[in-house]
Image (tube, rainbow, N blue to C red; front, side, top):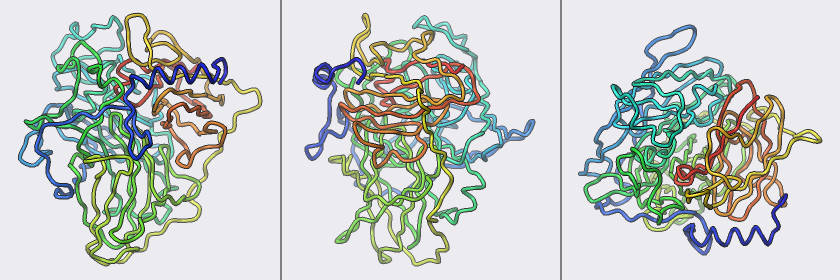
Length: 514
């Protein structure tokens, strides 16, 4: 553990755990976070049909790039039956529109801010130049706002009024990305209140495979929320107006765990399926919750879940799981064969790491026999092994609860986020080893490029670490090593914990590619 004895590490862990709020289920510590009980009347599970977010359509083409326009605005939606929930939404919906992009074909997304607060858009998993990546201080102010009231922390980025163009070259392999707000200090409440959407990249390699497609390809954004009695999102922010005071009430510093599971913005929905293979693109868009997802069948064994892809796209070959562990920010691309059960069967996606309402996710109702010419090939794609050379640079980053001066929150290497101090200046094209050391659960997300997991503790990669990753789930008292290589784009980026309460309370660090 390079400079930190086991005794010292366990002492640090004990102090962190004492105040962190580890939520146990079945005797295991599944989540770092604290349950937030809502007050709204909740519907029974599996009464609401699964919504499918609309696909964004370009408004034109300029210089070979498809151009899109998105308006961020407040709206009211019926999420819980009979109640209206105020949301902050991309195009006023939650989730936002789904982008369908092609590898190698650039796109430009103009984001217009008609919200009451500034915004920052990050394409999570995107291989994106620094000026379009969503630097946390690059605020897009509300239309007509001059902005002086928002610069409360004394740190300034590239601040623009009203609208910003994000340029995404899409020079990356097919993968499921997502986009969400990334404003410094206020990512947690912004995402919780609706600023999130899916972004799918496709390429010729994926197109050549006989995978399920069309109506049998389902993007599934899974997140937990709590609701106040009037139907509004319940979130324990210190500043409910999201203006000046960052963070949450100290009781929820470990993370906010809701009591309702939403899939594509609907509470515990159902979806009617054919007796055929389906491709499920799983995204955990929760602020803090981890899930163990299984597909249960009444009176029978669970349906196998065949993983074909990870955060950064297709695996080399499929892997069969009994369940999938997915932390905040992670994505899993899987195929499920509903022809393995009789027509009329109800297959329930359950969260084995949850209790109460958090144990239910959604249902699939197998309603008809159907022709199915899809298949999962034994070989999916070429995946370059990222092998650090002899003598590669090794960097250690410790994620822990702590205090820096007057700041009490979460730290990396004992420091809180400083945009002007880089914890790593990394030469483009060089492969390094990054060692992540943790006190409690931390899903660590690295911007700009995906990485590969080398080992967990004394062993190799974990069961769910295969392929290219941009977010890795660190469990309590764990050391994980990853191989990192940045390419093409020089500039200033960040990496951080994707427990959004940890991120907002300064568990984020600056890196530079040089």
